[in-house]
Image (tube, rainbow, N blue to C red; front, top):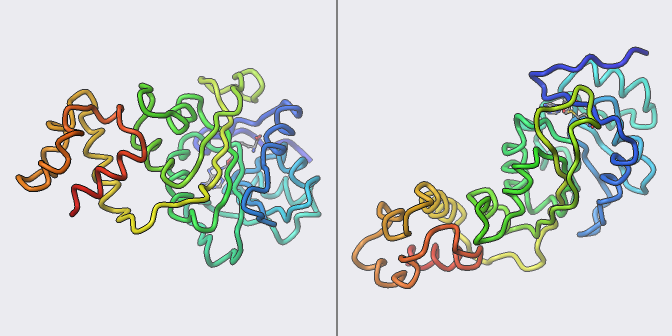
Length: 257
Ligand code: SAH
């Protein structure tokens, strides 16, 4: 069977280094005791072949018909575990009733959307291992005080511990992407915050980073009033990137009361 022709609009860059593919598959640690793994965008299955060597039940979701045909042909073992469609539209909670890990060499054009979707289902997803554009990986894994630290880092780190695992060079892909890549791992925290108003929290974080060079006194102006201003006074001379995730949670709670 012929190889899949790489389509740019689907973010197709096929990994050609088996060693790296194996290392990505091995980065899953079973954190949270899941039995199922969902791979997003298997393409020609370079990662899938190693996932199938594990003791987990493997599912794949792939939007590209040509790749789906390739996978069906080469991995008969997967049979009815091949979902043809868009991960972003996948009803995760309807399809899977148990905990499920997510893995993939992700299409870079939708990588933030993938992360936001995972976040929406954090109760069901204890672990994620993924290849991202290096810059996005750094942003997701960054801690406070780092210039890459931003909205995505804070919101994800409320629910997940995040590790930057390794950098991947362009030349191990066909066709090579324009940027470097990196693999990161997210593991759901054992202690999740209680009674967090998620909508309000996201709004505070977004507002704070909207003008990241200004102090919070200026950046948070739309959310401040005479009363809550006093309670959050100690934070107001800082800039968003100086606040840890824990401090953001506290700030949001103080602003609300
Ligand atoms: N895992 C393969 C392919 C990576 S390229 C490898 O490492 O070689 C990204 C893959 O994601 C492609 O196969 C592409 O068709 C698929 N894809 C792109 N958008 C998708 C979406 N919304 N849902 C599911 N798969 C998608």
